[in-house]
Image 1 (cartoon, one colour):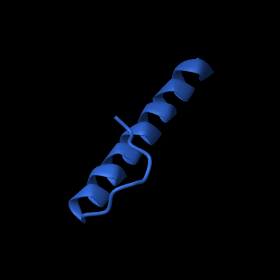
Image 2 (cartoon, rainbow, N blue to C red; image 1 turned 45 degrees about the horizontal axis):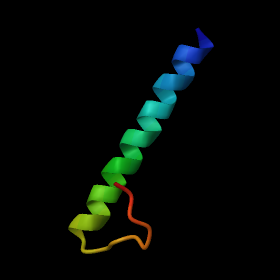
Image 3 (spheres, rainbow, N blue to C red; image 1 turned 45 degrees about the vertical axis):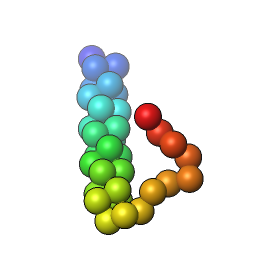
Image 4 (cartoon, rainbow, N blue to C red; image 1 turned 30 degrees about the vertical axis):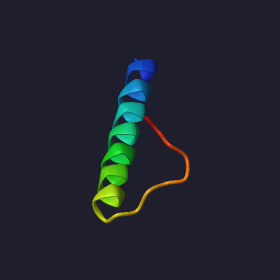
Length: 36
């Protein structure tokens, strides 16, 4: 269904954002807002 496809796409976006966040942390860059 389209809902399952949407959930899958959201999961991909979240995962890529987490990867980006970890990359920024590795470079010593921390965001002002603390996402935990």
